[in-house]
Every structure is written in C-alpha cells, then in structure tokens.
Image 1 (cartoon, rainbow over the protein chains, first blue to last red):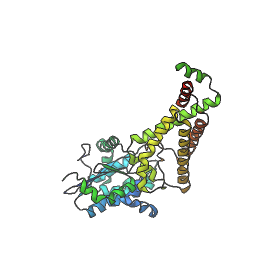
Image 2: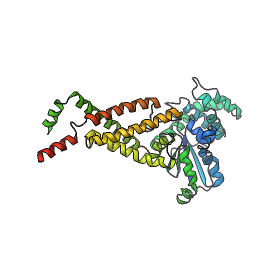
Image 3: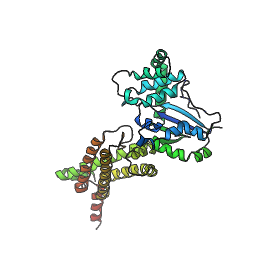
Image 4: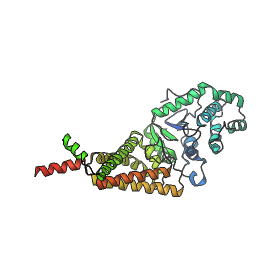
Length: 198
Length: 164
C-alpha cells in the first residue's frame, strides 16, 4: 500500500506487477548504510551486501515482482549535512539521476560528511553526472523539497524508525545489512506468503 | 505500617542509606533501560547487538526480545526490595556481561555507533558507557550488601516473625 505521505517527485523502482514491497529508509550520511549498500571495506562488504541484493539483485532474481520505495531519514543531530544531501538527491531525481547521485553521496561521504561549510562535493557530483547545478542548487533550497524530506522523517518517526538503514519489507522490519540478508535468504517464502498487491 | 516505615527510615545507618540508594538507583536504571528497549521494535536492539559481533546473528533477535524483559523485572525487584540479594546478584552479573561486551568492542575497534544500552535514539561513546556501568555496578553492590532495609523482604521477614 502506498504511503499518503510519499512525495510526488521521489523516483522509484517500481515493478509492473508488484508482489513484494521493500521500503528502504536511510539518510545520505550513514556509514552503516554505505556498508549495507555494498560500499564498505572488503572485510565488511561481504556482511553488508544485502542492500545490493535489495536494490538490484531482487529485481534480477524476481523480475517484475519487487517495488522499492526510498525514504530519507537524515539524522541531523549527528550529521549536519544529511538533510541538505537528501534534498540534493531528490533534486537530482527531478533531473532523472536520483540513484546515481545518491550513490556518489554514499561513496564520498567521508569527504563531505563533516565539512564545516557547504560541501563542494554536491556540485562536483552534479557536474560528473552532467546535471544542471544551478537548477539543482535552487531546487535543494526550495522549501517544498525540504518539506518532502521532513515528511519522510515524520513518517519514519511514526513507524518508530530509530536506526538507519531500516528496511520495511511487506510491513516486516529489518534493521541493518545483516537482518536484510536474512530476509534475502527467506525472500522466496516471504514473497509467496505475503503478497501486498497484485 | 506508615509509622513503621518512618521509624525504619529514621534509624537507617549510613551504610543502609547507601544500600537503599544503590537499590533504587540500579533498579531505576534497569527499569528505564528495559522500558526504552521494549517500547522500540526489537529489531532495533537486535541491530545494536549484532554490532558487537559476539553471537550468531540468528540469536541477536532472540536476545533483543528477552534481555529487556530481564532488565525490567530485575529493576522492579530491586526497587521493591523483593528477593533483593538474588536480584542484585543477577543484576551485577548482567552488568559484568555488558562490561565485557563493551570492552571487547572497544579493544577490537568495532564500529559500534550505538551501544544499545538505552534504546537506539541516543548513545554515549563506549568508554563513557563502560564507566557508567561501573557506577551502576557499584550501586548494585551496595544494594546486595546493604539493601535489606525498607524492602519487601524486610516486611515479609517481620510478618513471619510476628506470625510465630
């Protein structure tokens, strides 16, 4: 079931015939999430390959049967640029490059995460993807964009999200890459027993 | 009954006051910690447990569902002063176990961003949690050694004596 709080502009990977919904909640300044996304060190990467499976592998393993909804949950108290980064990612989405821009943010978070001033990486990543940075910058400062991110945060609080990344799969919860891997292992059963929509 | 409690309180020695304070402190900390974890989804605490890398992931969720109840019950027993010494002993054992978890994570340099001690919303650095646990351990020792006065245990024992 789609959330009424879902912003209209957020890009999604949506299957034509959806049986399983995977809702990922994260923020763009999260080391754990980067590991979950498969971008951790070699030692950790094996443990945290779950997100790669969620984002790409599920679709490959069960084509047309997975819907992935991405929700931001910036922890602004400990990561000051996370809200801004989320807004930039959404705006990159308006130019059709949400996932690519988000990937660059995760990969480069050590460079910009603790910046004292607005990180230059936001523009650098936009340039590398051929995005219109002036438009991106304007969009990221737009109150509507920030409102959409804050709506995600509010929804997360309602759903008692405390850690990132959190995955809600057919209303069942997995926190972190390890728990997601368990879901991945049991995915066939989950998919068969608990279809969301047809 | 009220007068009896007042009389007991007035006659408490320094050690007994320390025991009472220790019992109430350790009990309140455990009730608070247990309640916060129970109020949040168990997967959140399980995630914190996983980061210590001391048990199979399959057991983390089971531990996340059981440990908070243990904390809550022990806290209530300590505050009420029921089975005081046994509850204090169990609480101390649990605290020593937590200390070992924290120490090994600290020594191994594990990326534990949230110790899971008081839910997932806030967390102190591991070294600070280690020191705080030593304080709770001290309070638990005081409860074990001197926590008998103004407890349900003492009330029960007196009622038994009067019944004879």
